[in-house]
Length: 571
Image (cartoon, rainbow, N blue to C red; front, top):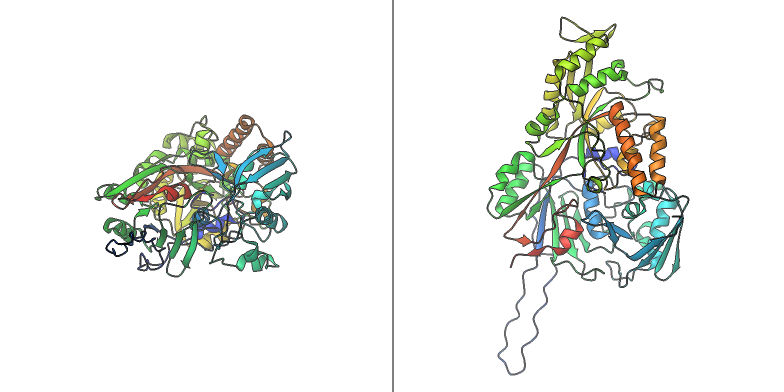
């Protein structure tokens, strides 16, 4: 699950966008709890004794702008939580920097000819962070826990859809039986973490399970929990000496939350932090000039969009959107009135690219993104022509109307997003030139969530998503049934044909066949316009080259477990 503005892949993922910047950074000693270095061997007898030399522990400090909501994977929504899970937990398989899936707990695996039975052989030498041997029953219990209590394990339940049975065949073999073939099995398994039975099996109700903070998280990953101080915005992780795939080359990771980006950038400049993967666009060029600092620009899996209220008018209660938004011509005119390249150049300062579909180009190395879709061009004259032809007459006050329906729309955005006010200003300017008046409002994220999902009490919203590596989840946000009961649909889009295609892509085992279906779904959503995708932003990172080296530059990020396992101090 990737870091993103909304934590998708999961039930109720809309809550993710509500994350605010973390509390003010607290001074953190860099060594008090760091692992102690090993003393060198004693000199041979007869030599003059030499005082033991203790090497300084290699402590990497990461700066960010938020803290985990919880370290309980049953109910974690924020990207900061999953960043920690990536370091402390293991799963049967894991996404590699290449985009392929490689063995994590599993040494090897295979699927039956009919795709209904998957068999995994575990690696040797796996132990929990407390030194307890890890057994095949532990991973079997972990997956079965999600299957047996989907309401409790709300944020992971989506990944076990279609799982029929998970059993241990012997001391090193896991077998998973499915109801029907699954075309993205490895992707799903990568989020089904091996969790500790002694920590989680005690909870009898979903509410009890979800209230468990899991502050002393116990896993089998390359780093283990030392300290989690949510109030101070500090997480300390120690290298796992017994990690089954080899001990990390650094001794400790400290993750610090800052209350604003300026303070974080200054901390990078003076060396109080060694790495950040949340470099603000406005500081990118400045940080390039910092001595001993390397900046990294990577295409992300994120996009930002204009959400158009698409809730069915016959729902109860009825949506409170302007009825003109149900007119496809109004939506098309709005699309013509958005200069996406200007948004990228002005707001992102060129650090991104104009967006088209809900599947970002980075997914699967571009395999899943429908690059054949031609975007609607920015053309205010064409937008005005479309509205004229649709019968919306321009009034003396500059606002178009058709009968009693005036093109006066609310445009809202979450107050914790720094770049959204500028987007709103530009949209208001462009829309004003085609006779659409926008009432712009910054709204607390929690309030905005309550208004949109599923109340449908809005017209337009600027917001964003970050996608999983597989397109399955980002496609699911458009499903009809994800709006009815307060799921992750924010637009209220409902299209039975789209829903049927979603089920078809889930069942498609052939990769090319699945891509064809997914491309068709993207085209359908693009033409119906529940979203107008504005841009695909870049991930901006920076690290101190005088402190650490050998970061792995990949779509997983410089702070991924693959990267932090190989990072080493500069000698």
